[in-house]
Amino acid sequence: TVLGKAMREIRSTLMFLETNHLLDPGGAEASLNRIKMSLLIGEAVSHADYVQESVPDDYDFKKQVFREMDVAAPHQAILASSSSGLLMTEIQKVTTKPQRCVLVHPVLPVYLIPLVEIVGGELTSRETVIATYDFMKNLGKAPALLKREVSGYIVNRLQAALLREAIDLVDKGVASAEDVDRAFCMGIGLRDPIIGPFLRIHLAGGGVEQFIKNYSQSYHYRWKTMETWTSIPPSAAKKIVRGVKEMEVVRKKSLEEIITWRDEMLVKLLKV
Image 1 (cartoon, rainbow, N blue to C red):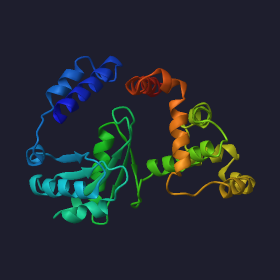
Image 2 (spheres, rainbow, N blue to C red):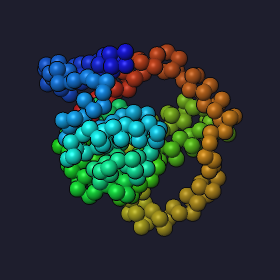
Image 3 (cartoon, one colour):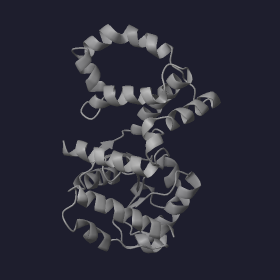
Image 4 (spheres, rainbow, N blue to C red):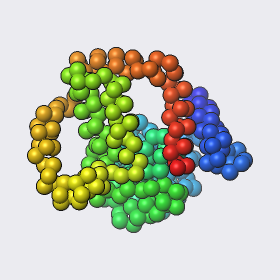
């Protein structure tokens, strides 16, 4: 069943965290004992102070879930959606208390990556946003607060821009998929855990003002040669599928083995 599969995955994740000393000894079993399963939304949320739904990104699906949560949850409960691109302004339209509805987007793998993006809809109250921000911070997360709604929020918009250029480099025969990944991981990726794009230009230019003065023309040449398509070209789709399947790690390891390797490496980074 879906619930059985979910519990197996939760158990595996908790054991992974305990094995890597991110949970105290016995923490995995203690956490599992606090989980209660239900097939009924009303039963699941009837005594909650905070609800985080994680159904697929589909407005009709989300709205149906929010309708049911709105009726069953206590009046003071915060209703949050973990959408990766939808807007809360649209979802909260079906509720009677839209002021308590908020978007909270964690980043995969959510059990290791600390960031969560938080943004309210047009009718979300400031109190709901602040309470959610404080709650996530107290959970040990690193919340980023958006000042206004935008599809994809911060993380997925940055990833979308990077991915389009990566795909285009492969499509135009500039480099293989494996070498594009290598350029990222062994280049800018090494900096990314400690500095973001704005701090990077501040350091690269000897001050952000100097960067804008000295590098604007150089970036102009790059940007004007970059693609602006909004759907992956069919020719590019075939090349990136072939390119990913030709990667050494993909040829030698299963998807599950790569995920385990990724998580083990993330643990090492988090400990650093």
